[in-house]
Length: 151
Ligand code: IDP
Ligand code: MG
Image (cartoon, rainbow, N blue to C red):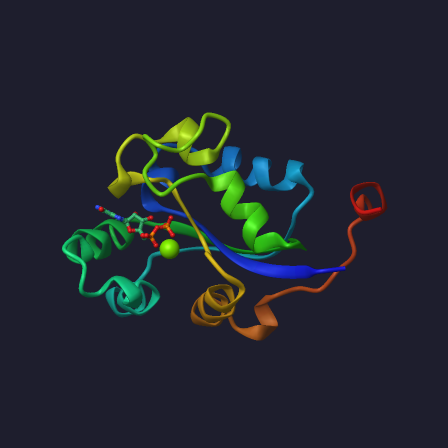
């Protein structure tokens, strides 16, 4: 089975708007497994490292202010093809273009307030997981429902 790990984060707007539970519920109900999770305030240096691919973009400064503006909930999510499965649940970057039924489609309007982050590839996932979590913070365990989720 193609079990992958991906990095997911409820962004400061998601926390402030009381959407932590809603977002985690959607990931759980899909059948994904949470293998690490913490609430934290992102330091500017970590924010810049996390979003380094966007450092030349005009919105970079606003993005760093946004992501460091309040607590976030960072997670490592595991499952079969978890990277693309979670990106599908999250929806398009611009919430106005994201389909209803996706997290951004249901909960956002502006691209600079799009509620959630999820890694876009397995390489990004590895990089982002290593930025936010130590190896010992990521748990390996079986869930009782696995046999009902995977054939
Ligand atoms: P993603 O979060 O869907 O992977 P990216 O293109 O990697 O989208 O952009 C990272 C984040 O930067 C977005 O989630 C959004 O918060 C912000 N962002 C992207 N494009 C814009 C923009 O044009 N204006 C303002 N913020 C943007
Ligand atoms: Mg991205």
